[in-house]
Every structure is written in C-alpha cells, then in structure tokens.
Image 1 (cartoon, rainbow over the protein chains, first blue to last red):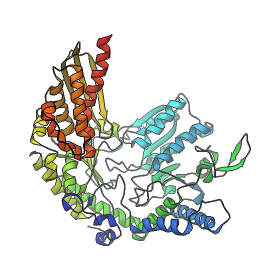
Image 2 (image 1 turned 30 degrees about the horizontal axis):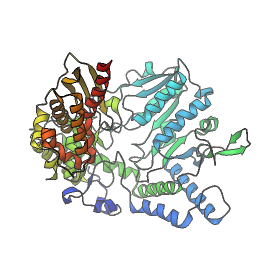
Image 3 (image 1 turned 90 degrees about the vertical axis):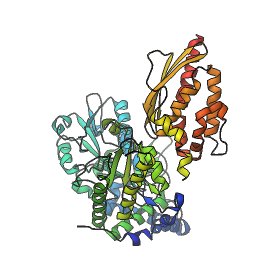
Image 4 (image 1 turned 135 degrees about the vertical axis):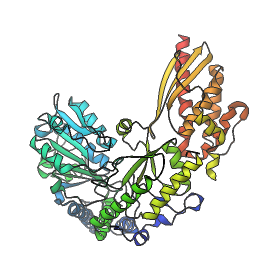
Length: 417
Length: 148
C-alpha cells in the first residue's frame, strides 16, 4: 500500500524549496542523511527566543533569565517525552559527535566500577560505524589499553551476528553501535543485541543519528544505556545535540567539560558537581538551538512519527525498484525492505561518485558522494566511495523519478552504456 | 551546459587512457596521498637522476578530474629538472585558485589548460591537485635524498 504524506503542504513550510538551483532547476534534496532542511517553525522558534527571552539560563534574577530557563528546560521536556525518557536523563550537547566524545572522556575520567577499562577489556563496535562512533572509542582504547573488537558486515549489508557469542563476553565493557547505518540504510536489531550485552554487564551506547529523525524510538524498549543524536538531522538547528543516559550511570559518571553551571560548590582548590544533567552542561548552553530542536520535534509530532516512517518506507521501496532498472548500477546495502531505512547507496559502473554527483547537481539533484565518514565500510565493499540518496518528509515520488532520470542522463554524458 | 567547461574531451581522454599509470620498479621516493573528504588515493613513484625527473609513475583511485590531472601532470614533469617541474606546478596551482579568472598558459601547462574550468567548481579543485601535491611532496623528499 502506498502511504505518502501531503508533501506539497510540508514543502510550503520549507522556504529553501523556493530556491532555484543550477540551470534554473528546482531543488531535489536527497541529502537529509547529512543534514535536514529546516521548516519556518524551527527558524521562527529560534528567532522568537532571541527577540523575547534571550538571557543566560540558570543564572540571574531577572524576568528574561527566568523565561530563558523555562524555554530551555521546556525544550528538554519535549526531547525527553519524544524519547520516552525522564527530563534529568537528557543532556544537551553541541552535536552527536560531542555526545559520544563526552561519554568516552567521562568513562576514562571516572575509571572505576563499570567505567574501569584496562588491558584485557574490550570495546565492541561494528564495521558500519560512522567515524563519530568509531574514533572516540579508538582513542579511549589507546588511553586505557583496552582492545577494540567489531561485528563484521554481510555482503547484503546486514550486521554479521553469527559471531555474537564470541564477540560479547565477560571481557566486553562497552558496546557502541549505530541504530541505522548512514551508508547502507540497515536498521540493526538493537533489542536482540542489548539482551546479550546486559547479560555480561557491559555498557551499551547507541548512535541514533539516523534513526531518531525517521521513526519512533522509545529508550526503555531498546534496552541500551546511552543514546546520542544530533538536532540538525531532525529538522532542528545545527549546534545542538542530545545525549540520553540511564540515571544511575549518569550519577556515577565524572564530567567531561568543566566550568560554569556544572558545579555544586567551588573553592580555590576543588569543586563538586551539580547532579545530571547540569553536571554535563558546562558553560552557557546553546539555548536558542535547544528551543529550535523542540520546535522541530513538535513539527514531527504533529505529523506523527509512524506516518513519517510509512512515508519513507514507500519512498525507499519506490527508489530501490527504480534504481534497480538502471544497467550498471549496484545497490550497496539491503535490497529488501525488512529493517531498512530511507538511505540508499549505490555504485555506477565506469562513473566515479564525484563525477556522477557533479552531473546530478546540474539538474538540481543534491546527493552525497564519497566515503560518508565510514571509510572502513567502503574498504569492506571494495569501493572508494558511493553515491547516496537519503529521504525525508519533504521528498516525493517525483524526486525519485528525477534521480533515476538524472542517473540515466549521467551515463549518457559520460558515454557509459 | 556549464558542465562542459569542467569535463572537456581532453580530460575524459586522459581519464580513459591515463599516462604513466602503473608503478615502476625503480624509484628514488614513493609517496601516498589521500583526499580525506572523498577517499580518493594516489601512490606516486619518482625516479630522480641528480636534478632530473627521470621517471614519474603513479597508481590510484579517483574521479575523472583527479585521474586526468595526475595523467597530465606526470607527462608534463617527465624529463624536466626538479626546479622546472616545481615551476610548472606553481603555474597550475595559480590556475586552480583563479576561480575562472585566467585560462592558463598553454606553453607551460599544455593539456593542463583543459582543467581551467575546474577552478570554477571549488569542491573539485582538491581533486585536480591530488596528483600534483603528491609530486611536490616526492620532489622535495627526493631532492633532499639526492643531496645527501
């Protein structure tokens, strides 16, 4: 069944679609996996904060400080409700990258109990991780002497769970995985893996950058310990990210950034920390951006995350069917719709992704080309890079038709049959 | 189409039949360069005889611009002195940073002037420079080696 949103009505909220691209082409934006476009409601919320409430939160005794704090904490409530979480377990960061770095540094700053890492301990990742969920853990392993392990990826683009019993053991201290691959579109079976992780008492960190914007996620059901995502991929502003964590772990964890706002008492020689989430939010936070993120979540809630997901499933299925009619095109990632999101990567025989992307740009089609910050995965599939189309609520079937036609035109341009 | 200024026939010819591609056994220096934003890679062997660029061979993966540019570069510097080669490289760098304001000296750059259009596409300039920067690195390392 074809389930699509009213894209014309949605597009009316996104002024960027009025822009004329090269050769006066309309914008066919297929790069939401990198960053999403922003609706008027989000930009207006940010501006309204600056024009009506702007003051540093959690300090000052004036009306503006009170309103700014209420707006910022209100944004936290919106995010918490969206995740099925408690307010105090939601930490605002500047990005998902910062969220994951915060964890890696807080773990080594704590270095006791479940956070203790040393020689013989293992950090388990996967071959499909974005560099943001790979390098912070590589560095943590270097600092502590722990060993990195990883799940492989099958030729079909699924996580290879055949070795799960060997990979998850008493030595495993941290498991950090992506919820949905930013290259393959694969949605990983987190509930299933979290059961095994819990049995050995390891900490489970989920990179939810590519899942939270696209389907309903309830942190309690996933069974993970930490979850990170960024605001700018979910219709929100840049400069705002989220880290959710289990209350007991947040309470036991040392902070990563130190300074104003995050303290309880301070003397010249020492300091103690405020409880979470403040302990992890040193300095004046990105307030307007937090408010903008809440407006983005309100926008998506008004549509309904189930409808967002159905829309993207329809688009993705249509795209896979269309792309597979093109001779010389290979999909890199699952070609069936089971546990698969709206990200489609492909390679074209005889045409380098960068060259292909350049021709598509002449038709106003914005795709991502290259290694997608997932270099180890590119090596696995023996390519230097891919072309990636990723979908969101403002895309329709005509966008996918444009992509398919654009690829045929690209082949013609480079005289590839 | 604007695109034709980028993908001139000469470039596509070099892309399909690159010159000096395939690494030689003999070399003074080998360098490996990558373009971290797209994942393109080049390995370049430079053979010096005193101050003479005796041979340049290369291998790698990349887009048509980076492959064609490496092909053109390797042919241009062949048989030149290191100093001459670096001077050609200067001219090419100048062309790449010109944003389309100059067309390049065909006397110096030969087929390289076909890449002039690249300078109007800022995201592609680093593709065109990949092979050249690898050569520069190898030439400077090689010169130090020969001096010793």
